[in-house]
Image (cartoon, rainbow, N blue to C red; front, top):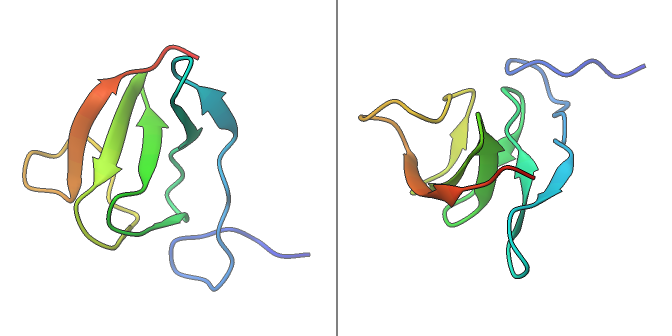
Length: 73
């Protein structure tokens, strides 16, 4: 059975959350791979990746994520 880890080949795909009538996103996971422009929800906030990222938690001011809007599901 595959195991998700930021250091292995398998990646966990987060659950889909509807943030508004027009926006959906998946919950952020540390093993997920995010490409430029993809979004993820973490701690009630929808974030957009500015570049390829994996295992970089949203919220770090020097990280790849930019706050898009709130998302309470």
